[in-house]
Length: 295
Image (cartoon, rainbow, N blue to C red; front, side, top):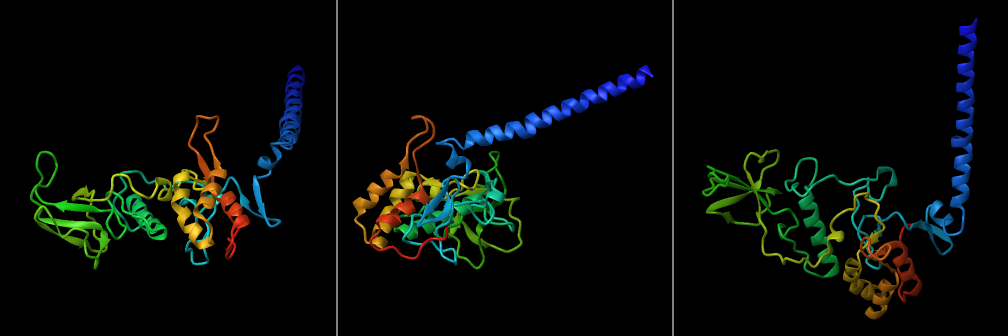
């Protein structure tokens, strides 16, 4: 009987602890946190930092979005965001990076390498903005300038006298970016072939050491949701915006500066420009506003 009563007391104590912890952690704590989140200065952030234009929500200041047409082409009258690797782009349910590192330079059947993605984006941005989109280790066509070199290797692992050289990121019938390498003719890459047993040689080319296209214009953020771009990327786009909108270049420059956020606490991170807010402000002053973006 005593053993049964002791067991009953233990179960009763466990039940009381469960009820108390449920009330505190499951009811009181969420209510307190919710109440604090509704205080002035915190409410908009807790509610999702929504941004409105013309009386409707067009997005969040914390999540980037594309400013493109139905075919995915950039709307030239709007500032463009940085690339996104989250789902089909800026998908909060698929937030994440591509997980491709700096040594990912050879395209595969699963998709282009990180190098080729950077090269293609830089070429596209250069053409859109009318600047030199070349980058080191990129072909003129916007692929990674990478060779697979075959032949006897020396003690350093290089091939001084190649017997065969393949431009691995330029599938046939493309014309390789180099005609020859160390006396061997450079071939295009045949479909379905694995060239990884050759010596992989990235070729720098004659691109400027400091590319005209900023790095955030050609790389996705770690979350894939970055709503900001660098002031340098915003300034690169300013001439196009001024031309498309019929605005003075100086006014577009002032708009960029007005929408630039400084370093956090004065020393952390870098200044950034929120693309959504900048485009909304641009619509507010534009003398030639075209079709609205899709919020």
